[in-house]
Structures are given as C-alpha cells and as structure tokens.
Length: 458
Ligand code: AMP
Image 1 (cartoon, rainbow, N blue to C red):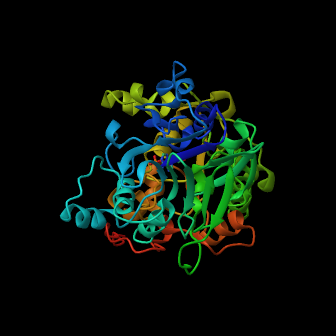
Image 2: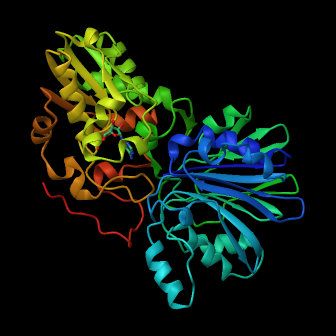
Image 3: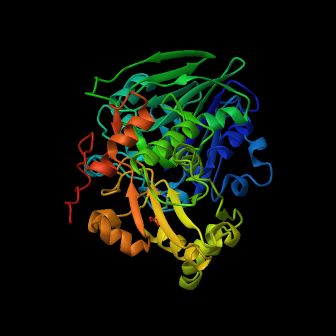
C-alpha cells in the first residue's frame, strides 16, 4: 500500500510534503520520496529506502527547492522492495519531464506491460505504476489528455499524482477504491491520501476527490473534470475504514475513529450475551472498536496489552527465533489486568491467524481464565488486488479453514466475526452500497486479468 501527498504553490512545498508524508507513514514504510519542480523547471528529488525520518533524516527536504512537490511512501504490493521501484517515479517523455506517485494496484498492468514490451518499451521498474507512464508517453496532445487516454486503458485502483514543470494533476479511479483528499493552506492547493496529512501541516480539508474525478492545478488555479465513462457503482475499500487508515483521518466522508467505534458497537450487538469480565483491544488498530464494544456491551474496557513502538522491522527480521518472539516484543500482556479474568479480545481482522494465536497464548500465560475473540470484520477469504498487502489465498486462514478450525488454531474459547451486513451498516451509516468487499466476498468490482481468483478451498 502507499500514501501520496502534494503541495502546489509555496516555496516550502517539499518540506510541507515531508511533514505530510510523516502523517501517512502507516500507509507504507519501505521507501519514501519527494520530487519538486525548481525555478528552472528541472526536477529535484530525494527518494530512498526506509522511513520518512530515515530518508529525510538530515534536512534533505530543504534542499528540494520549488513551489510544487509531490511525495510518496511505499509498501510494496507489486514489484520488490527495492530502490528502483520506489516513488515518485521520474521520466523524460515527449511531453517533457513528468513525475508520478501512485497509490493502489492496477489489475491489468501485466497484460499491458507485455503488449508495451512487444512494441519495444523498456521498463525501468517492476511497478504497475510505470505502465501508466509508458501509455502516456505514447499519446499525443496536452499531458492531461494523454493521461486521460492512458488511464482509460488501465483497470483497477489508482489514486494518482502527476507533476510536470507546469502542472500538478491529481486523479482518482472511477471506482474510488483509494481515498484522495483535496485541501487548502491559504491559497495553496494540497492533496493527501488521508486528512491526517492535511491536519499536520495546518491545511483545511476541502473535499474528497470524487471517484473518477481529475483535478488540475496550473498557474495557481484549480480545475476539475470527470473524464471517464461512468461505472455501475463506486467501490470504496471498506478495509481502509476497518484497519488501514489512521483513526484521526476522515476518509470516504467518515471519521475513521467513529467508524471503528461503530464497528465495535455492531459487533457487541451481534455478540449479545457474551460472558466476559474485560474487553481488551489489540493495540493500536483494535482500540476504537473495543471502546465501542465496551460501551454497548457494558463490559469494562481494559488495556490488557501494551504495544511497544520501538521494535523496528529490521530488528524483527533477522532470525526465525526472533520472529517467533515478535508478537510479544510488540505486544506485552499486562498480568494485573488479565489474571483470573474472562477476556474478550477485540481485533479488526484475522489474516493468517498467526498474530492472534500468539496473543491468545500470551494472554493465557499472563493468567487469563478464558479468552474469547471478537473481530470487527468478516473472515478474509481472498487477496486484495487493489493495493492492500494480503498474502496468497492459500495463506489466508479463513480461505482454507472452517470457523471452528480457526478457533482451535487460535486457541480461543469462542470466536465471532462481524457479519458483512453489520460491517457495511456500521461503516456506511445508511450508505451500504458502493464498497469494495472483495477480500471478504471474492466479488471483485473490476476484471482482474492479471490474477486468478482462487476458488474456495473449504
Ligand atoms: P495475522 O496474524 O496474519 O492474522 O494478522 C492479523 C493482524 O494484522 C491484525 O492485528 C490486523 O490488525 C493486522 N493486519 C490486517 N491487515 C494487515 C495488512 N494488510 N498489513 C499489516 N497488518 C495487517
């Protein structure tokens, strides 16, 4: 997954972009980059592997002069985690220099790439995003028309920023899988994957770009258009609200924290009568939902697990033995809060099941009398092809095991998943249509020619 950010019209554009990327860091931790347009029209860039705080550790953003900048944080979903795949991408084309930052996954990029390579295209990266640039480079006319023509050929998810020396273009795919927010800082236009990026720099969120909408900033003026044929219904990613976005953000018109609280309330209603002494969230992602659950069920909320924010991924990676301990390195049980208690553990999702299994074991070791689990989303049965990093279908525990087998694997006494209807009602607040639920339902809103939908194994 990725986060994107742009500022158009201030001399400190790159530094503001760096701040914006900080607030989007949860969307991607593998690489970070910023490209700015200097006075002479040339691009300045700094793109590196690691966190924003690592790539821009020594004030490098200050060196990126210019009034316009775009930035990207990346978590690889197509293409390996390597510098050549880090973004923003920069190319010299017949339209002049362009730089692109993309959030989302295209579902026909491999097909298009093969065709393009057949016609002599040489790809520099392994990202699906580069396909858009190759398509664009082959189109005539103004760059926005070329971009529209190339985006009409791609399928799947994109919230995209494209920068030239004269223009900044922000565009959201017709299904609107990923969020993209327009903000303003005085007379400066800002774009961010989530409002958390805008808030940090003191920018006001103006509105979300609509699915299929394109915004063009040139000469300080903003123009918007809807250049794509209509689709049957939008398909906003419901998992953004369930897990991915930051709780202080508002996306898809709804505060994430409030949506998660409602998910917890809905789960409590579906689990009415559950026997537990404490509601314990898996921090951080389960906290808002556990609060909602606790309020509705009347069971006390307890921070029975404490998250360490100091475990870096590189620390966890090196040995298998360390990986085994990773759950406890990251999440430490609080024995006083758990001893002798019937614990109801709340998490937003189960993917492989390995995290919940380890947590359950450590809750019992800390003295919990029984462990029940409530999950604020339905079982994940199919991979995301639109940008969320999910493992192959065979590794998704709910795709290969029945509910009671999962319960046994996790080692919990009872296990309850929120129903699909319950989730959509909680997140949508009366707007239950227009969501992508493919990871829960195997119903993909677009063709996915690059992938084969795994059949249910159950
Ligand atoms: P697992 O151990 O594979 O079942 O992972 C479940 C945990 O991972 C839950 O605590 C989720 O909050 C979290 N999670 C869900 N989706 C993702 C994702 N795409 N990337 C990282 N963590 C995730």
